[in-house]
Structures are given as C-alpha cells and as structure tokens.
Length: 92
Image 1: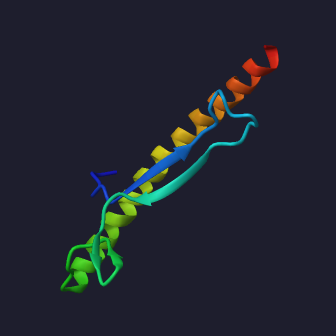
Image 2: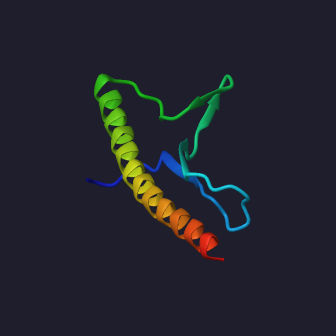
C-alpha cells in the first residue's frame, strides 16, 4: 500500500493496573484533522472534477485501511496486556 494522507487515526482505551474491574480494550477510529464549514467537519480539499473526487476518495480509503491495520495490531497487543494484567492480579 502506498503512502496515506494522514486524515484518520485511532485511539485505544485499555485497562490500567488500578482499575477495579477488568474490561476489554476499546478502539475508536477518529478524524485526525478537519476544517469547518458552517459547523460541519470538512475532510477533503475543494474538489472540482470527477477525477479529483475519485482520487480523494481513494486516498481516504487507503488511509482508513492503513489506520485499520494499525488499530487491529494495537488491539491485539492491548488484549494481551489485559490478559497479563488480570493473570498478575490473580496470583497476587
């Protein structure tokens, strides 16, 4: 996959050592940046042709695919850390 436009990102919420109850990690896909136009987020530059629209949509899809891969990898790591943390608590 080529380079991405950096329009999307993910955040992950994980269990911390001090949390009283274990919970599964949660991932959110987010807009990394946007402009405002009448209180509506704008996530593309001005597009003036069908070819520009197609190109921008392709860039956004590539960007979402890339952030999805990173988010999935982070979720796998976070789930393992949660399991390890719960196991540690069980042995204490």
